[in-house]
Length: 140
Image 1 (cartoon, rainbow, N blue to C red):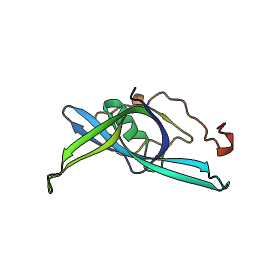
Image 2: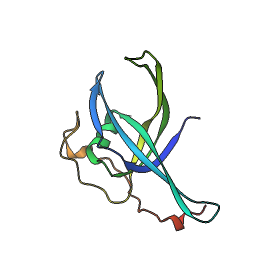
Image 3: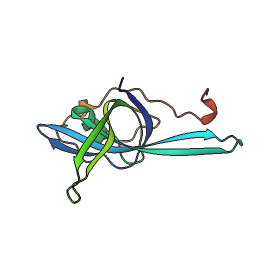
Image 4: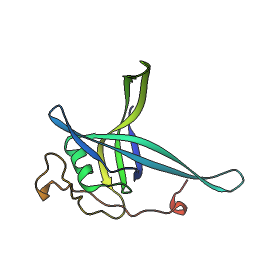
């Protein structure tokens, strides 16, 4: 099974561009894990994940999210491979292809620059918002 669920903050503004008749939106998400060490000291570790979303999903992410926005997303892992132009070495990286997303916490206003293909306010996704929870409310 190839399924990913992430909740974190955008690390940069989403970038939407046309690709072969449809649109693709690229953005990054920082996901922070908080935990206690064996000595009881609280600690955290952050992972930075590259994400991409196609079509209307990506357009709406580009329209309503910006750097620092919280997002809850679901998708799948995609291994991207290419050949380095300068060295000729084979390179690869994992990215998440987003299938669905949700707003988390306070919803930001619509961004001023509209992505390709969106025109009407009826394009707003119908989503439920979630209030942030504290570390003490997590049952594990």
